[in-house]
Image (cartoon, rainbow, N blue to C red; front, top):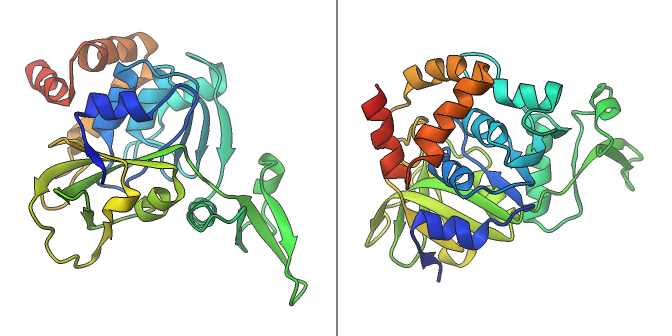
Length: 282
């Protein structure tokens, strides 16, 4: 049975310095509250993994939490660059960032291989492209039946995956509805799974067009309403498009970014206080 913990305790117990950590969520259910708690607790030297690193990884990398990033697309969706990620790559600020770049398909293949406890995943998409010239971890294998050369990517097995979901029941089963992205694959590939949820219910509703993660794959659950803001949580709240636009200006300047993180993340006790600080600042 997973433990129901306060978010600060879940991060303290399950995210260590130097760990490989995957915060997944595709367009919605992005675990912003968990990422901010990682910043708040001062974690360092993390290997961050995410199919689409956007604002939360921009914040974590700008706050000095990461040494390496395994990813596919990265940026501020609908707006432009992720300026803190770019600064870390181009200028080494606040510390250098190693890149392990893939396509969405390559990330999906790596997660699936990790979930199946296979050493690598395969896909045709990299053959004939220049991506293997820029990522030495991309290899190839030859099919024993046809002789065809197929691209290979090493399996992803994060030390901990962190997700946000709409609800969990009191036994620790977790239900995700709407776009799921790589949530299921990351959950099953990781050694530990921490989930923040909008609500805890007695019984999960039927899983229509969604997934249920059974309690025996979940390590810890934290009740954290609004834990995906400013992304959206289908059925609970909409995406805050205005914040994504405002973030572009905040993140462009090192001093302005640092002041924002110090005030709203490091300077708040938890996610509830974080949201309150932003309302006061508006």
